[in-house]
Image (cartoon, rainbow, N blue to C red):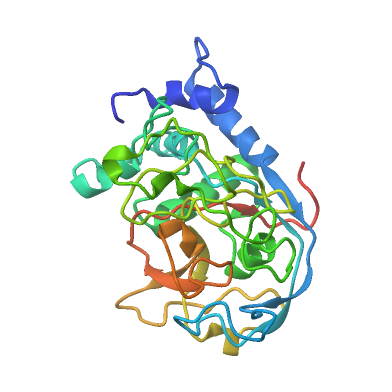
Length: 312
């Protein structure tokens, strides 16, 4: 993994310094503890799921109608990670389940398995991880569930949007203000991008052509205390994608279709399209939704805990 011992880096993940004698069981235990500590409780309730529209009545998302018509739904309480899963955290999962070798001979996927202790590296352990496919995102949350005994899972897209909008507020971005002040960090040509440049603004939503991202927590959180739900990386949800799902969604805890609409091309719903580049037509808002093939690489994720009481 980029010439770095992943277990040694994993020690860094938790304690921010190298720990002498840090063994695998200790590392796993600390990452599990951190996953629990990072969970933010979200009181359930009713909200309007979908593109609620601008004050003048026009929709935010104009390139598709996937987020319309809006639907009134109610969801149960749950907890969600305040951060996107990092390179350091998922490295522990790969090592613990010996999954890295599955991709060892696939050149195009190796960059999604690397982890580094160099803050200037795009795979720095505190930066958001990208996974080779949907299965590894789902697998990581399932691993947390098995090892902790808590019902960890990927969020449904309704859970994702409810949390991004700080319990359903009618805001277009999951930032501290509900609006965006873009960090110009990745606007410059690739050869002039300097990872030592301090963050500015309140979100990073540039550019799909660059692999580099900011460490999680670099920008102010939304009012609920969640980071990077607008920008940094796009995020998998557990829902199978259906473009007109809101026309059929149940009013209680919607979870998407029971299976893929096209078995030849199964797609899961990806949220936070600001995390895959620069967007027009409202594609970077919290309302934007679309599908990606389950074998698609490069998306990030965060996990929820489906328990109606706080876990920490």
